[in-house]
Length: 285
Image (cartoon, rainbow, N blue to C red):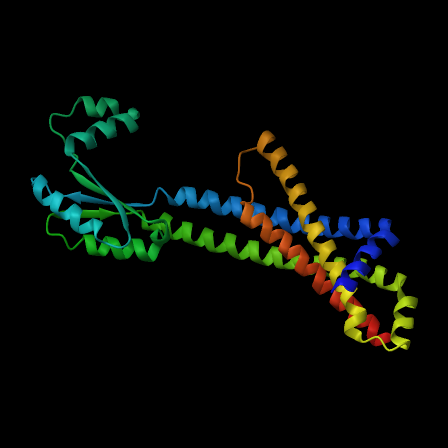
C-alpha cells in the first residue's frame, strides 16, 4: 500500500498537466451530475412544501357539543398518521372566510345567520401525506357519528403524488445517464495516463510483477483524482447555486452529508474507471 501511494504521488508529479486535466474532466463530468441532482432536490423540496398543505377537514353536524369534539380530537390524535388536530368553531370559520374571501364581503354583510359549520382540521405526518394514507384517514373519520362531511382534496393530492413519482424517476434516470457518461470520460483520461506509462508497465510485467502490483498505483491514482474531482464539482455546484439563488430564486444546497457522498461517488467512479482502463491494458500487454 505504501508503494502504491508513492507511485500515485509520483504520477501527479511526473505529469502535472495530464493529472490536472484528469481532475478537471472528472470535476466537470460530476458537475453536470451534481446540477441534475441539485435540481431534483429542489423540485422535491418544492413538492414537499406544497405537501405541507395536505390536511383533512372534518365538518361537524350542527349542534354537535364541544365536549364530543374534544373527545374525538383525542381519539384522532391517536391515529399514527395524524400530527395535529385543531378545532375551528362556527364563528371562527366565518371570520376566516371573511378574511380569505374578500371578494364576497357584500354577501357576508347580508348574512343574518352563520351558514358555516364547526370543523376539525387534521394535519398528517410528512410520511403519510400521500393519496392512499389520506384516503384511509378520511374513511376512518367518516365513522364518527357527529361528522357531516370530510374533505381532503383527493384530486390534487393524487396529482401531487404523480408529480413526486415523475420528479424522482426523472432525477434518477438523468443522473444515471450522466454518471455513465462520467465513467467513460474518466476512463478515457485515466487511459491516457496508462498509455503514458505503457513502457514502464511492460518492463514490470517482464520482471514478474503481478497484475495486482501493477494495477494498485493506478487504482489509487484514479480514486484520488475522482475524489478531488468530486470535491471540485461540489464547489462548482455551489458557485452555480449561489448565482441562481441571487438572480432567480432561493433554493436549497447539498447538506454536508450529501456533499460528502458526492466526493465519495467521485472516488468510486475514479476507482472503477481506472480498474477498467488498467485491466484492458494489462490484457493487451
